[in-house]
Every structure is written in structure tokens, then in C-alpha cells.
Amino acid sequence: MDETWLYHYDLETKQQSMEWRHSGSPRPAPQKIPSEKSAGKVLASIFWDQDGILLIDYLQKGQTINAEYYSSLLVQLRDILKEKRRAKFTKGVLFLHDNAPAHRTLATQKKLAYLGFHYLDHPP
Image (cartoon, rainbow, N blue to C red; front, side):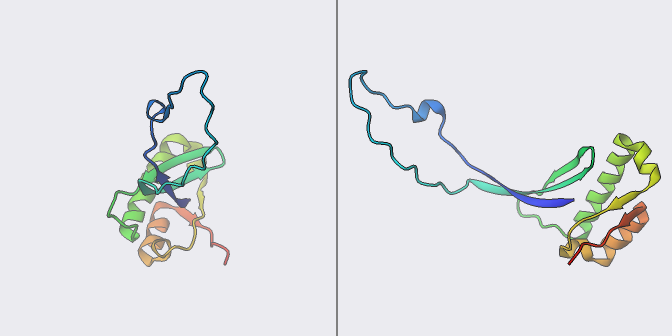
């Protein structure tokens, strides 16, 4: 499991960026396009295993990841594992995530134990 920030931009459409010239007119010198500030960003939490992505969650604007929110994601993950990877789920789940504050709380550790996930320590 890991989180990443995804940035999105409002780009011009192809029609908006077209340049009209006569066929005989000289081409202007290429111009360096200034970098644009992103229109926004969203935090994506991604859960995967060796066979592919299991769950992607996009954090809503104004919300933060805390132990309660993260625990609800773990419950969603358990349900998806039961559905998509039933054979692997019955053998046990080895779970690795980074050492973010929401991941290290006692509530999260208890939720992992309750769900039957075997937590792997993140290397320092």
C-alpha cells in the first residue's frame, strides 16, 4: 500500500491551440511554453498485490487520512480480497505499508490484527 499525489491540469483543447496561417506565410520561431500551475491535486491510496491493483481510493478535498479513515480502507480491502483473491486470503495476508502517522497508531494496529492481516515492519 502506498499513497501518491496526483496533479491535474486544465489544458487547452486541440481546437483552442490551433494556429491559423496562409500556406505561404513563414512559420514563427518555436516558443518555449511556460509551465502551468496545476488546477488541483488529489491524494490516491493504492493497494496492490503481485497480481495487480486491488483498490484505489481518492481522498476527498478537505479530508485528511487519520486512523479511522485508514481503518475503513482496510475493511474495504479485506472485502475486495475475499472477493477477488479468496484462495490467497484464506492462506493469510502479509501487509506492508509505510510508517505514516495514520499507519502507526494503535487503532490501526488493532484493526490489522482484527482483520487477520499479518503486519510487516517497514524498514527504517
